[in-house]
Length: 435
Ligand code: UGA
Image 1 (spheres, rainbow, N blue to C red):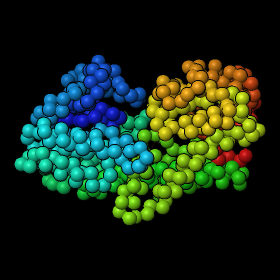
Image 2: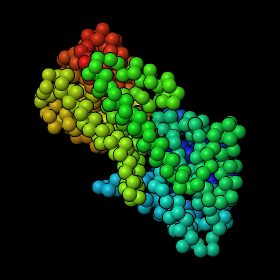
Image 3: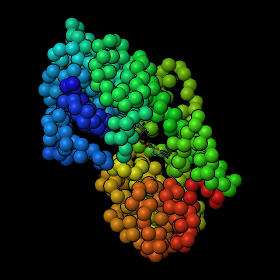
Image 4: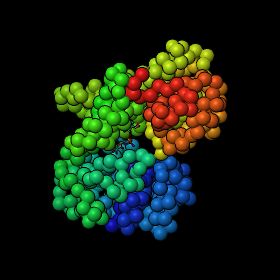
């Protein structure tokens, strides 16, 4: 099949590359000429394990092409994906759909034959209807379908998540779209991956409900972690004990400093906004959002407690800055709230992240960044582990301790075993373990 993908962000680039990997001809479009020029040279705008290899391989065979022109991409395309960003509107919480609607207009103008327009961006219920209206207004006699095909990939494991998903969700309103999407996802149907074919509005809502459920699950275990600390038990064992019940499941029960990233915080807020518009109260999701925000800020108090109540004038080393490992993404990272709060209390911050320091330096002020984690902790009064990168987990605890002025560790991801850190001489504050 010939496919056009509009938007070369995380979702667009990974989906386009993987569709090419399945043997389709894919043209990826982006308005950002510099990004396209870089991609043509095999340089990726994001850090994602395994993606570069796939982009280079498919680009070399000519199955994966990059352009700034929607018209060029649309020529002869069977399916056109809209995979542009839907960032939160500042001060509103709802998703900014201007990029989606802009793409719909350009598609309408460039359309030749029948096209199946598929919205892959995360969009509120009813956006497919609006996209259909936009195209129909510009091309009243045009022949087209509008489908919804939300994406569930995670940053850091995006390729595997795309090529081997738990399920594919497709929202369609007509048979042409159904047939084309069935051909496109044929490789997964052959692999017995469940394909949920549903209404367009249902598909749109499934995406938000999935993210809100996962965010709630994390928040649940985080709150239970607080209780474990007070009653003197271990949240890891609690998570195992409940997670082995297959109705609950073990995934997403890792307690930490609160969820971050470009999806959960944005999508939970957007879902709440939709519910509000329809006069429905989603109290569980409301509480999840509030509890997670409060938690991220409260992590600074854990540091304060660990150092005896006052960080003014102290040097605090932060290991790990990105919202999770294997990404350079700093959006809504728990490290941001932590560092800003500690700075307000007068702490000097030294930080290390294997990949995210460049992005972090654009957001954070007055933070000394270190490529070498051992240099980062030099003469620090405490070290805080915020992101559980494998390279951080593998650090030599004795060397870390030796470089520091004190022996205080606040491990917000339980990245180092508490026993191992104590054996190296650290006083450890962890998450969800006896205080
Ligand atoms: C999330 C979803 O997991 C994807 O299915 C979805 O496609 C994506 O959002 C999206 O909507 O685009 P992502 O934001 O890449 O993916 O990251 P996750 O792995 O879900 O982690 C999100 C946050 O939750 C991170 O801050 C992570 O540290 C935290 N988390 C996750 C925990 O604190 N504990 C856990 O057990 C799991």
